[in-house]
Image (cartoon, rainbow, N blue to C red; front, side, top):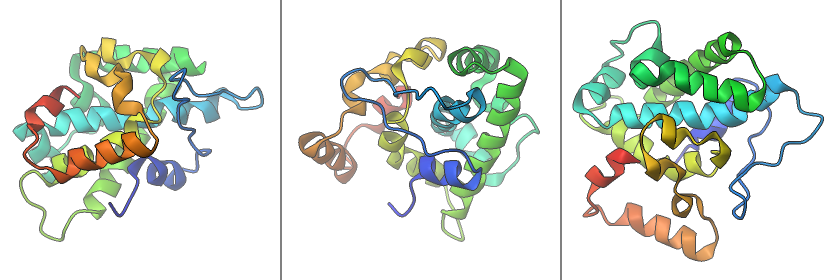
Length: 192
């Protein structure tokens, strides 16, 4: 994998470095000197990337992301009826207003889509975005604080599942094997 989408979005938008979750608590240590604005990226980047991942799992969603035939409100497109609940969850977690959170999340979504498209081949086809984001899955989950409980909002308990967020020599090897064997039923990952 040539790019880590989480780190690239963070760097391109000038946010502070995102912290990985603690494997025991599934939380990110919040330092007292970090502002609510700076802390926003810790929750918003992984959640927006999850939204893009889930949206790309449908043929229509993948095609829209690939062709760029999207509306101005990318958040509404990827989260649908759950958009405001997702925004409110992140705003409450970070201490920002809902309007400011929505504004920043929209910027994050467009930047992420720009990065994804730039990392595809010159002639992207079919499931390229879906595959790219599936390969980024682990990078996304290890930055997602469990207390957001975003899986509840998106009606997908696998998002908050601790086993997908584990790291270490054995876990890393298992995550590598998941990618290595394409015979894995990717439809199970649609529920991410």
